[in-house]
Image (cartoon, helix red, strand yellow):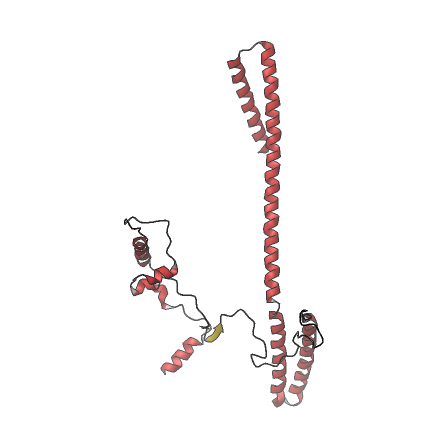
Length: 257
C-alpha cells in the first residue's frame, strides 16, 4: 500500500512543492542574515557589510537544520528526477539510435573519397521534414483503411505513425542551437539599435546646446558693445549681461518644453 501511494505521488502531473518552503519564514531569514553578518566580520570584530558570502562559504558555516535549507545547494551533476522521470544535465541532444528508435533520415557523414579536413555537407532538414509529413498523410490514410477492414491490425500502423512523429520532432529539435543563435543575434541587434538611438539623441542635444551657447556668446558681445558705446560702467554691464543670459536660457528651455 505504501509503494502504491509513493508511486501515485511520483507520477502526479503536478508535483507538490518540496516541504522546505515552510522554513522560508521572516524569522529564519533574519536569523540567517545575522549569522552572515557575524561570519563576515574582520579580524578586529567589525562587520564588513561589503563582503558577500558565497554559497559554498554559507554551506561551510555551522547552521541549524532549518537554516541550512535556506542556503543554495550545490549544482547538480549527472541526472535528476523530474515528475518521476530521469533527466540529464547534458545539453547534447541524444540521437534516435541512442534512444533505440529507428531513424528515417541519414546522418551527415563524410564520404570516403571526401577530404577529411573539409566539413561534411549539412543535412537538408526541410527536405526530410517534407518527406516525413507526406509519409504521415499516407500512413494516416492507410490507418483509416485498416480500421474499416480489419480493426484488430491497427497496432503496427500506429507504431509507424509514432515513429514518423518522433523523427519529425527530433529533426525540429536539431534546429534549437540555430534558433538560440538567431535569437541572440536579434537581441544584440535590438540592443545596438537602441544604443545608436540614444547616441543620436545625445548628439542632437549636444548640437542644440552648442547653438544656444553660440547665441548667448553673440548676444553677450552685442550687449557689451552697446554698453561700451553708451558708457555704462563695468558692474552695471555685468549685471545686465547676467540678466540677458538668464533670459535667453529660460527662453531656450521653454522652447524645448
